[in-house]
Length: 132
Image (cartoon, rainbow, N blue to C red; front, side, top):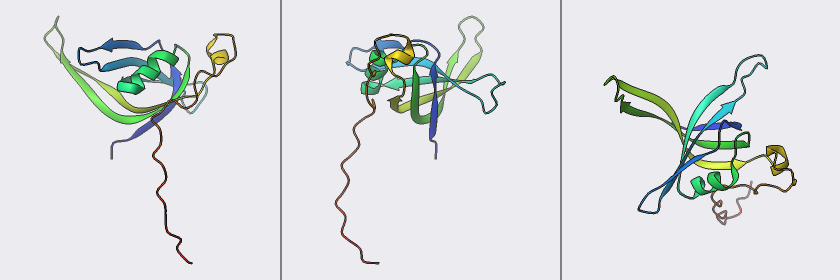
C-alpha cells in the first residue's frame, strides 16, 4: 500500500497552474521537522490537483502549518542541457488539512484560515445493532 501522511510547514507559497480543461494543480514544498530538534527538517515536494489545489491556493502561504495525505510517486524528465534522465520523489496529495490560523501565518487579524479543507467525509452508514 502506497500511503503517506505528513504534518509540516509550507516551504513556499503554492505555484498554481490552470489547464484549458479547467483543472488546476498546485505545487510547493513541505518541511517536516526531524525527530531530534538539532537535525535539519526533511523536505517533500507536493503536487495537489483539483479542489484541494484550490484550497491550497486560497489558504496556504509560506510557513502555514498543514497536514497532507496522499501517495509517493516519482517525476521523471530529461534534462535539456545535459540530456540526462532525471527524477525526484513527489507526494501526490489527496487530502489537505489546514492547521494554522492566520495569526500563526503572520496575517495578524487572528481569524481561522479555514476549518478542515478536505473533501467532505461520507456520511456514516446505518449499522444494524449486533448483540454481544
